[in-house]
Amino acid sequence: MDLKCALEECSMALNLFLNNKFSEALELLRPWSKDSMYHALGYSTILVMQAAMTFEHQDIQMGISTMKEALQTCQRFRKRSSVVESLSNLVSKQAVDQLSEEEMHAEICYAECLLQKAALTFVQTLMFEQSQYFDHNLKTKLDGRKWRITGVFCEGKLTPKTSIETVGRGTGEANLQEAESLLEPYLQKFPNGSIILFYAARIDILKGNFEKAQLRFQDCIAAQQEWKQIHHLCYWELMWCYTFQQDWLQAYRYADLLSKESRWSKAIYVFQKAAILCMLPEDDLKRTGENIVSLFRQVDGLKQRIAGKSIPTEKFAVRKARRYASSQPVKLILPALEMMYVWNGFAVVGKRADLTENLLVTIEKEEIALQNETNHNEYYMDDVCMLQLLKGLCLKHLGRLMQAELCFSKVIQSEKQIKYDSYLVPFTLYELGLLYKHQDEREKAIRYIETAKNNYKEYSMESRLHFRIHAALDSLKVSPASTP
Picture (cartoon, rainbow, N blue to C red):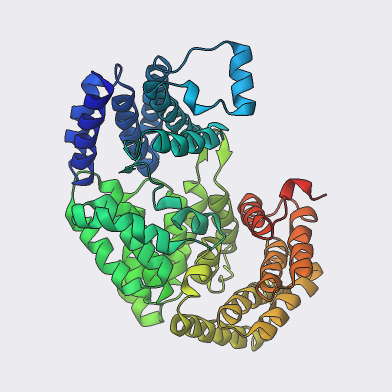
């Protein structure tokens, strides 16, 4: 099969995939998956996506195995060079003009396969930069013929997951206009494509259009029944949509579905369900028939290890749930809003002043109730500081920056009184740094963010905060590697 035929057939497979015909797409790609680089890339990409959605061990192993085979297939089409030449090319980024058209395609496919294999095995690779480099130059040399097929989208364009991933990492900054412009042609061509609808709904969320997002997620669920994992992704997003709006019964509905149907993280789902139930009025709670204490006590036994490592958010949930382990449980304070912060939800809901005001009202009511308690338990100051952090976030997004600064400062000043939630101080230092960045006080911003980075170790979700710190320092044009 020559390159032109391979590209045409893979484009057909892509159309099938984006029209929810996942099995048909695989069947079209499979026969040539060991003889054509694009068939190999397309076939393995679909299996990698499936593995990423199921998080099942056998699916992950299948994805890795298939991607290794794809790498071998792509390797056969790459330009042969000696070890010295390879090292030289890696440093100098060999001129694209020295490669044939087929070899350039092979470099792109090889780099894409490496990148996806790395994602599955939690290994980063320098080939990502090479992929971008070759993609840019390939499009130039081929005089506008844009053939690249990458993951979900084709035509040599970056996917909207780049206006989505920044928020997932915690920066809260994304080029939504670019994402929408990239997605629009696919919405026109595949109006019922579940993958496309999911991305469109995610963009709506990031814009604060939660009501519109909810409708699109429902359409996404109705669009296909073959990949139930896509339903689970929608349930997760719908749960957060309703959490942002404090529609706790609807949020509970989707948390409950996840805890019963999805195997990605039973510990997180059960904790999340219990956390949402904590927000319900007593009468509504009784109607659900759920027992909050029983749910929290299940969390520890549901935690898992992947590649010998615990999942940080699961470890966080287990630690928080321990307050319910004794014969006299100590209730968590606004656990659903605390988890919302863990998943960076305040950066999203902060785009809606009305919903942020509603969250602030909820937080301040809990603050007053906590202050009025006569017998303070051992978690009292931890709870006080957690509420101050959440309150400060709301105030920041509402533009009440001086009040937000006071809230963050209270947490930092109370550091020695915090007994269990040691994560609060470094995260608050980071948030205070962002507040100063917002006010164009660059030096103060860098100082507080670097203090969070350098002065605190071994606290909950440390790696998650370091992702956010890296992104923040990068936006301030500071290299994290250059800091002490």
